[in-house]
Length: 223
Ligand SMILES: C[S@@+](CC[C@H](N)C(=O)[O-])C[C@H]1O[C@@H](n2cnc3c(N)ncnc32)[C@H](O)[C@@H]1O
Image 1: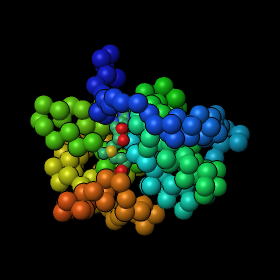
Image 2: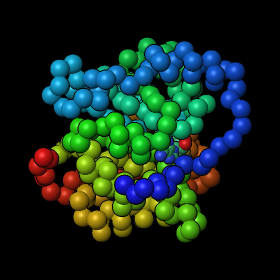
Image 3: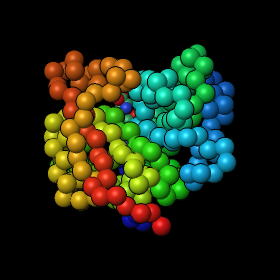
Image 4: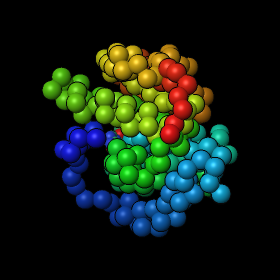
């Protein structure tokens, strides 16, 4: 990764509400990522499958996925405190135990905390579109993150991307196809993802949703 990392998220200012503060104080430690989920595949006590969601927002997709896949551990990441606080309150309410969360930059998390060849999937739902050409370098899908994803996924691992920006979908198809390590498949909308958050906003604004699955172009052997 480059020395000067480009941030893929919007810097937000403003005070956290008391509700967010108190939820984070109690729930972040309770839903901290368990060390076993960060261990290489085959390690004792590791969940059967581990999936990371990048930019979970207030977590509707993460909650839906965890409820529908009790044997998979879902690590939800975002830099936005109110969203993570709301997701964790809902996880506690639903009694979910196969979800954990961290407040922070997913690029750093994937780089520093995830061993190579260990994630069954990465989910990227409605990433910030960064529509201006001069901001395209801030898009989460980039040559650098493709390196990172190719390294952190298992040999059979995949990436799910959903976007309500046709331009972002076209950009992902073009970049990934040119890169060559993944094939882009037009995917069907997963039934476990509720229509919420930025998907609902996109639909309300009359935009079409594109779901893409990035799958390894060739079976690779990880060192
Ligand atoms: C447009 S919102 C979508 C949120 C949610 N996935 C949804 O569908 O409603 C994009 C989210 O990605 C988060 N994000 C962007 N880059 C990130 C990064 N590098 N690490 C963690 N979160 C990131 C932003 O903070 C924001 O909450």
